[in-house]
Length: 548
Image (cartoon, rainbow, N blue to C red; front, side, top):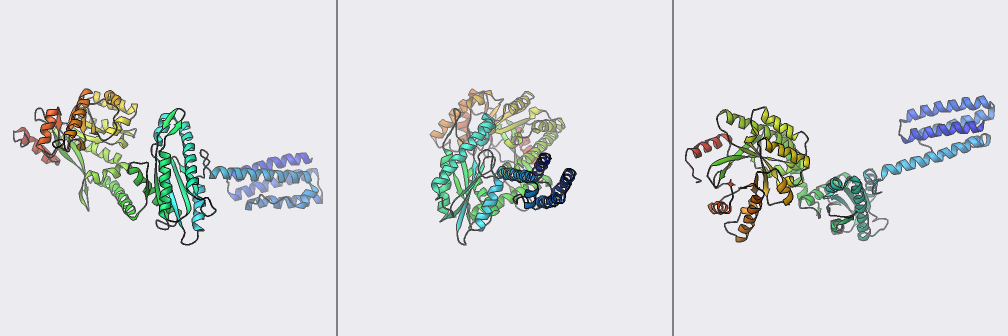
């Protein structure tokens, strides 16, 4: 009979452990405990109905119901051990298993399974305690570490290799932290992996901000060294943000936010370096936040306008088209130039919505021109963030098809980095647009990294030289040599050359002699709104060419 009771108890406690670990509501657990206990009482009473057993069962019931208050440590009552020793042993053994299961579940919930470092939940809990119990006047430091080029490893080598790389990064961080920080009870740092490729470190006691900067510098140098991973030399780098308690905040939330802001500044500066948070950074970040909010409202309110800058052939002097340049007609600050908001729009993803507005506006403009008998090619930029959207190419085609505008009237300008890094699927979509008549151009060429093999394989019509390349070609022999080499390279892959930001006659003459096909810039025409642009074109075609 007792073996049957023990079996029944084993089933009961296994169920109880499952209920507890899955974090069901306490009332539900209590109800199930009560129901199971009644079944156990009925079972034992039917086998051995005497007073001693009844008292033991009552005591056992009280013990079991204590589970609702989280009591998994108290032993079974003495009367149960005396009257039903095997059942008591089974109950105590199963409680031990439940405690072990709960501890394991707790550990799994507090540590990162890849690196074995504390996870976000664990870090925030422990860091909050460390800061809250620190003596008054003690300085501490929060370091936020973000890997610079980890995504490319996942994309090229797979997530399994990515996880191995994260383990190696965690080990290097441990080495740096151990070497740089005296490991005493009040200085022992807390290192954690928050998520993805983000790590954080709390140093509970520092003498000055210089201590934290020294650790941050060492981390940037350590992660900047290549990793050897299954025959591959991996160069990822890390950007590190540093915040000091109490100078930059005295809570986990404020310190993590400050360190995060500083980390992004380090990343914007090129990565593989650190940045210490400051009041200037805080003010700059607030401007960014305010601009982001205003940009979202600007899309809805229709505050954007397009300015058009003509493009002219250096061979014939004819107007070959125009580039649409975005302007923001801010309700309080007036007209804002792209460099004051495009980087923020790019970093926050709002550029995708703005880009969709540009496409619709360009399609509408070209449709109006067609109706009025004006057929001019219009160029506009495509952001890398737009290419990330699965619906980008269908949306673009639909916008022009809905207005009966042929794709031969548009020119899509892609940044050099986007052109070099886009996927094969995106390249196929670009090639399909080109096959259907669209002109494809690379913008700001010469500022990024170009893979010559990719350049040859790309569906490409035009390459626009970055203004920095031609800024001083009328004064510098070295600049002329570089530009001539770039022009020959681009001509070699069968593309036309466009030079923008041309401001001097001497620059235009040199570019013409070098074989540049098309130019745009202040020397010929400033960006202008649609009505002014159309009037300028009419005057130019009528023979009033001040630029000739």
